[in-house]
Length: 530
Length: 99
View (cartoon, each protein chain N blue to C red):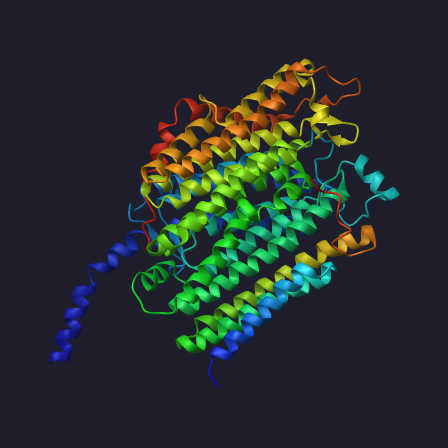
């Protein structure tokens, strides 16, 4: 009798809980990821089944439609998303406000990057090799430079990488994070090696990126294993709980934490773990560099933010000092080595290392403000970078892109418009008022100051002043030097590249003048799944 | 035998792998050292699984194996392409990108 009544009681207690679950079935939250990864699989089928001359148009249409569809799904979900966030896929994905913001940012940035990747007007046939298997330097290779085909596999690779990035910044446990890290990295390694011109450089970039990337993910994974040994679970919340109050071995915790963070910092190209960045940015095809520079940074910092703020929040006094140092090293390396560069793409790579330092300042301010300012900074930096690499791809000579700085001398006389746009973008990277870069730096430094990191902000200001010098050097070179006689020409871009650059420039300007909308969105919520 | 010995063994294997990545010159050997690091992690995952008394760690080791297999596919493809071009897989010879 008593058993019966207790069962009834239980049933009564459980009854109200059921409809809440039915109201928001877990899958609605992760539609954007499902769409992107599903379309990536479909895109692989296109490669296998479609005749060669149809592939490019089908792949471009599919990729753009996918990003649009995922964006629409995201927007419809955001409007009635629960403020407390929700988990999906048996608790392995946490869909909360920051994750939704990062997804939106990633989708918008990848739209720009895909437009650059798909462009076939700037370089006849596109910036990607027609047949990657042909050996560079042979007769066949010279023939393929003139041909108009391209390896359309780059589109499914882009979609897989994008799906991995979106999963990475929503991962609620470290195993999901590791798998997502590999899903985003492996396609990028391949994409780096697919340049149509200067294939030796491109292949070398792929090898370097791959070996160093695999090395770093092994560190990440060992960190995961040690934290699993420490906490008995890889769920971020469980690690935080175990670290908050327990008499377990601190060795496991600190060693695991250190290795994990090293793996993450490598992906984000921060500080002393940046050594791959300049080589890979220079060697990879420029559209891929744009995709990597913007989207990987967003995903990696999304992961760093979640790990630091959810799993490691209770141990912040242990890691904070170290990351202070890392942020300083990153800003100094980026600013000082950027000064000595003679190649535009390498220069932007070092600038991205400096920016990673600024982003890290926002990430180690473990406050709501630190989170929202870092998210906003990622948005602004991504769009500026996409447009910058779009512009870089337009300055060409007979051997391909003219990336050496001396070739950019006097470019304003050849093409005032391009020089004007590039000047604006460089000023945004430097953080001059009326550009998004200024607002981004301002909110990050403000968050850091209010969290008691005054000295770090002073270092950051000095570093951004030094970095501003090398951006200004390019501007001076473009406007006040005589153009070389056999200098590069500025290609008139087709619709795709024009659209990507315009998108980047407009958003850079818009976020510089009226940032309130994006700032509100960035600060609409914190990591709610703990 | 206490599980701690397995953890020490796994740390040792991981270190050998890491040192190998840093000192070896052949891209294939460097890559094998990375694989050694991943497998060292597998050993510690399984050991921790035993210590913690759950199956999570063993499941994770399967995930790591799958990821490592995918990494082999991508890695060997990239190393092959650079070997066919340069007739060498030495990481010292890939030196066009610098400064």
